[in-house]
Length: 181
Image 1 (cartoon, helix red, strand yellow):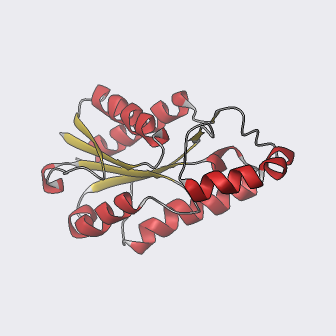
Image 2 (cartoon, helix red, strand yellow):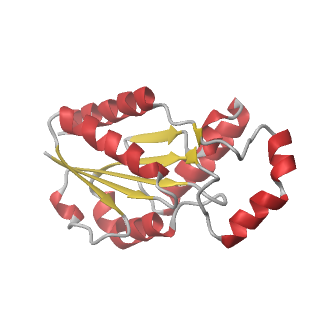
């Protein structure tokens, strides 16, 4: 059995999530490739399970991950798939999390007419000391007092990824995919 984990990232936080997912799926017996959606990707028809995910910025998936879904939509519809996102909304109140899951996961699946076996909603990673592009950097500096008042201290790294939860989810995805075959 072969699995492909494809991720889109803007600032690198989703790389670790994708790698952890690949590691756990591999432990379940799959031969796994983990690939950045920006890279030259293998033929998806060779895989039994395809997991696709993205970091979220400005309320959207990365273009590279969405382009991967668009280019491979026909093949993906005949495969076992799972979708995941890595974002700062994962540590919000329940109502906000449910709205984010709907927008970032369920609507993306619906947009591409996919029927994933699982949806993963994971915390994100932000380091404001690194540049996020001039527009974002200026917005952060201008709004730093408001961000701090809302609990976001731009002087420190924010890492809300729960590695145990990501591993458990990936293991469940692998089991579900194996049961289907």
